[in-house]
Image (tube, rainbow, N blue to C red; front, side, top):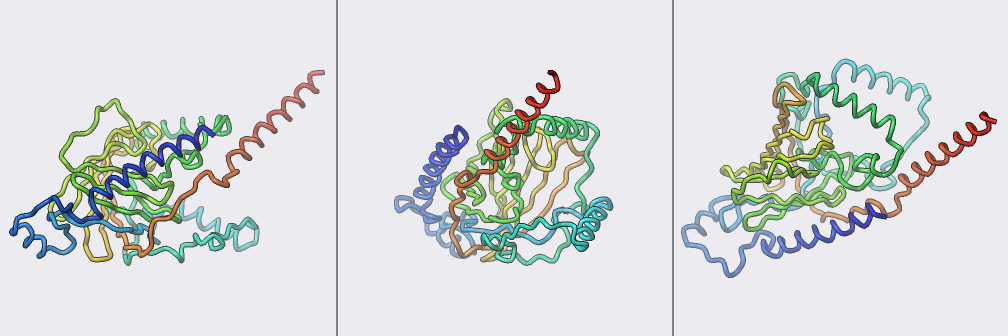
Length: 329
């Protein structure tokens, strides 16, 4: 209930913020009170995908769905995938979840054309290996999860708590479904609303510095600026529960958004974290324009999974306690 109340209050606050931004931005139209010189107006007419004030226009609803894997599978991953396929072919796997019945199958995704094999842009097509410090940190987290994953709502994954999904980033990568987002621009800001959990990133583009280093946020602290036709976003100040590729709170992300066609945005990212990888790495994905609005994402409504899972765990604990009491007699 507390989590649901938090989400409700946060959604109301975010909704108000986005509504205000949209009202100010006029969905890309300059307010009537803002005047332009004839030279500025003429310059904007000669630039495709630009707003009347000359700012590159990234607005619209976009899909970052893709059929391309993030990285080239390593030998162990390929072996596991092969074993999974064999077991499935032998009829040993009977569990089946049909996304199509909910309209969430991948065939319904709007996917940008891209003939690359992998999204990462490293020479070997793979994410750099974790350094020993990161391996130790990941092992400790895994051990804690095994021991405490059913303690309560706070120890369940952030997506299950309806706080955030790993794909929301930054960097923002494709999810299996609901891979849709909307960009709205206003004076000094770019807002990106993602359909998954309906989170909104408010990115100032007025040159302000990052917030104090002791303030940590789920999505980090983003600041943006324009380099020609590209929006460059720099993000720091993540929490120690950041989900992206097992990084630490020292994760630093640089994103580049470039409109390359009426219906396409090129999205590039570079990540670095000296406590996780020995060197920076990055990737690139194209977003395709969607001709539908962003729909409501009702995370908690009708979701009985957490209650049932935690309830089952408490029942098992009671049963074990009763058995131990009988054995003690």
